[in-house]
Image (cartoon, rainbow, N blue to C red; front, side, top):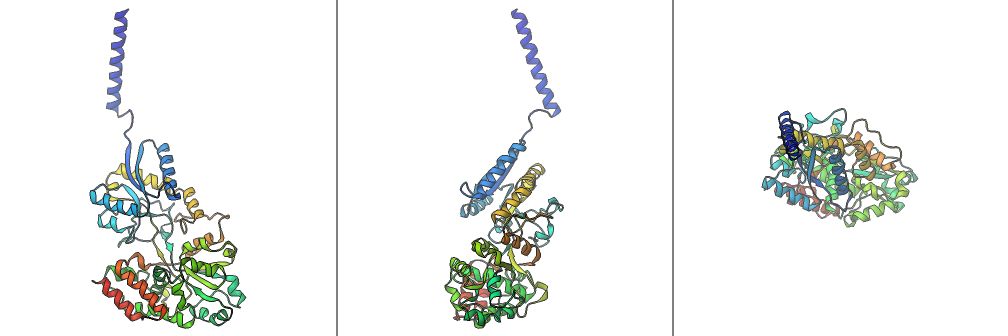
Amino acid sequence: MRRSIRTAAIVMAVTALFVSLLLVTTGCGPAKKVVVKAMGYGNNANSEGQTWTRLVVAFERVNPNIDIDDEILYDEAYHQKVTARLASGDVPHFAYMGADARWGAPWKEAGQQWDHRKFMDANYYDMKLIPAMGPNGEIWEIPLGTSNLCTVLYMNKALVQSLGFSQPKTYEDMVAMVPKAKAAGIEVITIDGADGWAWNSCVMSAFIARLSGDAHWVDKAVNGTENKFTDKVFVDSLAMITRMVKDGVISAKSVLVDYGGNQSIYNNKKALFMVQGQWAADGVDPSLREDTIMMAWPTLPGEKSATAGSVAAAISVGYGVTKAGAADTKVRDAALKFINTAFYAIEEVTLRLRNGAIVAPVLKNFTVPDDVGTLVKQKVVLANAALNTDVIDAFLSGAPIDALNAGMQKIAAGTSTAEKVAAEVESLLRK
């Protein structure tokens, strides 16, 4: 009896050894997980972070051979950690990133930008809606949505029509509204002029593109020697602020109005138009949304046909694979699988559109749900139709942008001139 038990044990051990050797030699057995290091954006308290965590968990459940080794941070903590990880050599395989000075520069300086074009399905993504991010048309990340529209005019259609006017086609059409608007105690355009950034992002970015006829005039001025901020076309663009105040289109008192005040003026029907970015749509009073038209600035005096009807827009942030991630094909493919099938799944993109997290999707032949709000639909139309041009503060930073923002406020208040402000910006930039 003991001998038979011993014999059986030996047979089982030999069999187990044989099976294990067979699994090793044939490549069978438990597959080794592909570990993908990722940096997500958000935290447990906001929708961005909650969405990220939900998608990672769901993706790993469906793809048990892939481990998304993620770190998720928000706001300034994210930027600090990106800098620290890149400096230490602990480079994520894919991460939340952009193509501008704030979101893209660290990856560029570290040599970690990777071109996604050959790996993007043109039948799924509408490549016409994704702007070039590199000098040769490279796409460094897949944007969450179309570019962030910054130079938008919100028009109260009913109020404009009550004064006997219609949607303006030219700047002169707006000037013609001034006498009746003043008589009714209404501003033509309201702007949060106390916010220096609003002047460059929401006004000047449109003007320089329109008057120069160059969608990328700002980029060329900041990153090269082709353009200078003392060029006549930039001075003329700044001088449009003086002209608007003189014509009564914008009040000199606008430099005292903050962001909330700007929206309040519009919502209380004390202005025909409000200038802000597309994000301000969420602050339009629900009672006015059906009567509000989101539009590009009308034709400006001296504008060039090449940029007619354009809207300045900052390239949206998104998720991108790094050079470190692309170096290993298994890691690269796993990262792209998560990005394409989880984060940019049509259901997730539609949810972001509904929540106002994006302007419009970059998916091909996307159908906007019928039940979304009027202003959401208008964003999609404007984003798909308008030529996108550079937003100044996506390229200009530090002392030069501070001088420009403060300088435009001074121009509006009548305490400085376009020539002085342009000279100061150029001087600070070339130091």
